Structure formats: structure tokens, C-alpha cells
Image 1: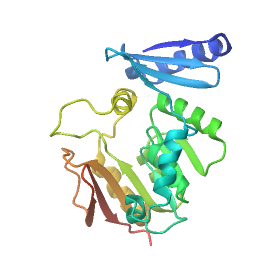
Image 2: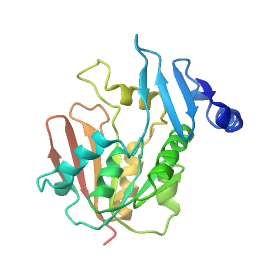
Image 3: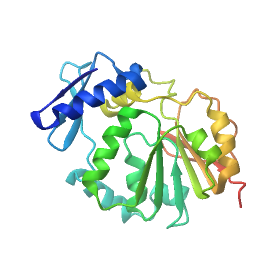
Amino acid sequence: MKIVSDIINKDKSLFIENKLKDICPKIFNENILLKFEESNIHILNTNYKKPAFVNISFLDKKVNDRLKIRMRDNNDIFNKIFPDKGSEILDCTAGFGRDARILDLLGYKVTMIEKSPLIILILKNALNILKDHNLTLYYGDSYDFLNHSEKEYDYIYIDFMFDKTKDKSLSSKNDEILKIISLSEKNKNRLIKLAIKKSKKRVIVKEPKHSSSNIINANFNIKTKLINYNIYNGENK
């Protein structure tokens, strides 16, 4: 991964480059370019003829317009999965924060955990620019967080998005970059079992429809054309 910046961010980019090399050398993929430009942080994936550009922005008008439509839809999938509005949700796999931001706008209080230092850097920057939100972000391992935290959550949300088997073509360009820079959960069932013990209402595990993860059987499932939401009853009532 190459890191470039404008003059304003030169010292910051050099500091971050050295830190990332120490913490997580895996993310220094030759196809990834990290660019600091004024208050923004961009990622480019040069694995395509035309490099894929990713900029996490919760202020994008097109994105927010789509979210407003979802907010008015009583049949939205998240209203089925998280039936109690205003509840507290722990998102164990924050990624680029897309689902967490939707839940935030739908009226939930969301705590995000992410263990990739590069994703944390980009997501934290996006949240700082957004300012007005009800999202909390922590850097670390979700299992360790749950194991040591005394905080209780109504819902615990886990997204195992990379175990797709049927279609071997590339995912969306955003998700392809996420695959490269994220640190996947190795012991999925260990995390699910702990989450069940810690959740007051439900644990929701999101997976592609054709998944190879072989996670433990859920109490029930809610499905869309592309996604399976595995629902486990929480035990911390």
C-alpha cells in the first residue's frame, strides 16, 4: 500500500504509515493507495483498469436520500430484524459503517467495534466530519471487548460478509477493498456463542445467501434475495 498526501497532511501521513507498518503489515497491499487530501481520506484500488475510488462519507447526498427512503419504509428489513426502536446495538464488525449509519438514522444507539487499524482511521475521520450522530466507535477485537465489557446490549450484530461460495466474481468495488484491508474473524462460532450470552434480546449474524462459514444453527432466519440474517435468542435477559 502506498500513502500519499497533500502538504497539510504530510506529517500525519508519515506518522500513520510508520504506525500501520508496525501494527498491521498485512494491509500494505501493492494494489491499494491511501490518499490524504485536506480533511478527507480516500482509498484507491488499482486492481482495476480504472482504479476504484472509495471515500467514506456520511454526508453524501445520494446516499442520504436513499437512507431517507429506508427510514420511511415500515417494511425495511432492519425493522424486522431489530423490532424494538431506540434499543442499544453492538456492531461487532463495523467495516465502513454502512449498516451502523442506517441503524443510527432509524433511531438506534449503535456501538461499533473494528480491529483493522486502517478502517478505524478512515471511519473515525468520517465520523468526525459527520459530527451529528449517535454512534460510538472502538478499536479492538470484538470477542475481547464482549468478554471484558460489563455493558449490556439489546442486540448484537455480526456481519460475516466474505464467505461467499456460489459466485466467484468480484464483489462491489467497495467490498473488494474492504476484503483487502480488513482482518477477518477466525473463530466465528466462539464469537457467536459469547454474543448470545451477552445479548438481552437477539444476536443477528448477517451472511451472503451462499455462505461457506458453517456457523452454528440459528433459532430462526430472516432472508432476502441475497442475504441470510441468522437470528439467535439472547440469554442475558
